[in-house]
Length: 341
Ligand SMILES: [Mg+2]
Image (tube, rainbow, N blue to C red; front, side, top):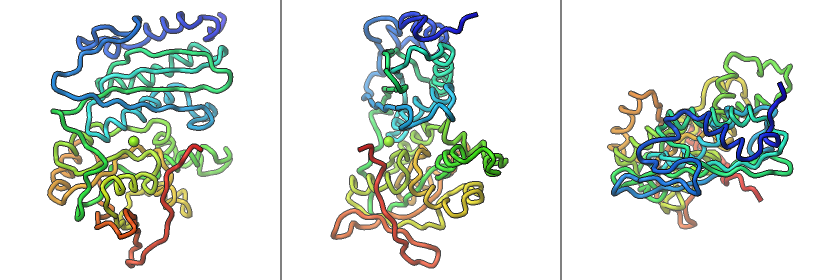
């Protein structure tokens, strides 16, 4: 049997195969008046809600490498990074569209694996896949995903509500994705590649879990500000601080860093946790009272949250972030997010 490629089946043959491969739950729903196959999708939002719209691009060799990312997890991740932005607003993800730039030689089976990964997350999140576009790309694979979500009872979380005195907390652990990336980049004979804890760290990079349930809980419990961690704590937390015009004090000893990350990377774990990025956990601020209302129920769905610091008054020079070690000494650091140019 000859191997089908994007070039041999053509754009419409490919779209047909993708559509048929999707579970019916993610391509049809009463709210989806018109799904894949017309000029546009037609979708009925919940009356009274406002729409949340987010888009993210992933480009081969910038965001991922097919030497270490398989197509199925790539499908999951390209949707997950967008769903994570909806989660950060406390929103409900509703539907997604995909734009793929492909070379003609790509195997159809690889594209179907990509959609299998995306559909797995869409189904788990109660979302629909509403269509997209497929174009030829001369060299690299490029992926553009747009997700539409909804507010909950017209309400949402933003970056600008942090108040002096609020606690600063993060979900899950930080640094695992950066450790996973480092593991994938090590030579194959490095014993750390074969550590029992390695697969979970690599998984954290390849298939991040967007924190939709936690976002909903943060909104319901009165968290004051939130965002998702795509660029690392030192890249992202300053965005909350400047939007809210406050400063922060963090305790390094309180950072939730997995023991496996500390054990495998005794010299790098702190920089992985602070600047590694791609954890897609939520960082949020909340009064003590709101935090207490969050941490109990979060445990019920196995979502760990950890206080890492406190919001303080902005300095005369503006919003800033100070970090302290166990002895109370201030630790120097550089903030700033990864920038593409
Ligand atoms: Mg974000």
